[in-house]
Image (cartoon, rainbow, N blue to C red; front, side):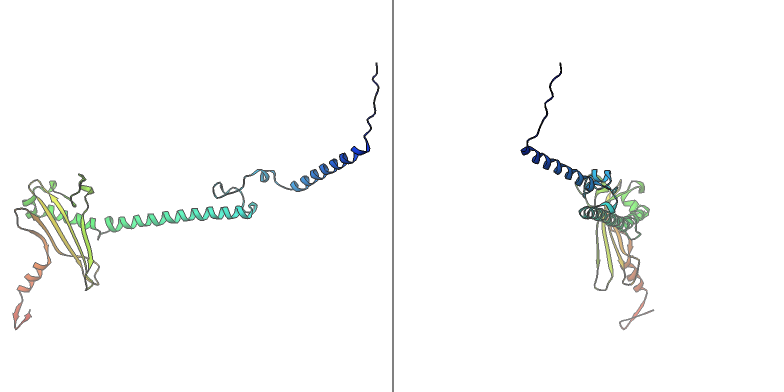
Length: 232
């Protein structure tokens, strides 16, 4: 049995809204097609570049003005970190050289003084065997001798002479002692000279390894003095 076909006739009132809806959809599709024409699909899908997620893979020419500013900010921050790191590294290297490795460093003079004490007969007689003599800085709550600071002073007098003074302690199998060191760098000179290097041990006379004042007085005693004038 055949079903009767009914013709669908749109009323005049429904034709106009339907036609306007179709026209609007056609314009939207046409606008979207022209807007996306020639755009790289990868570019349309990429995330916006910020100072926190920029990995440098997006070319500079494809960045917007805001993204270029973000990349410039990130690069400036990275450059600042590198500069700070270089300054800190240079400061550490300078400190190590001036305080440890330089021939005029505090550590170098400390080691030289200890070596001389271990080789001096008078010091060995008062302190004991050279291999058992140890030196360290001021007493602290730390039991490790290497961490005890060495007291030192560096100052310049009115004549422009530099004075370097140091004090530390020595311990031997027989006795303990206090070491005092005084170096002078004359104005216009590049090297320090000993003013004195002495060791004080309880129950013993002060042991001088260097004494510039005694040398000067000894040299003056050999001169002939007449009418207040020293004659050679």
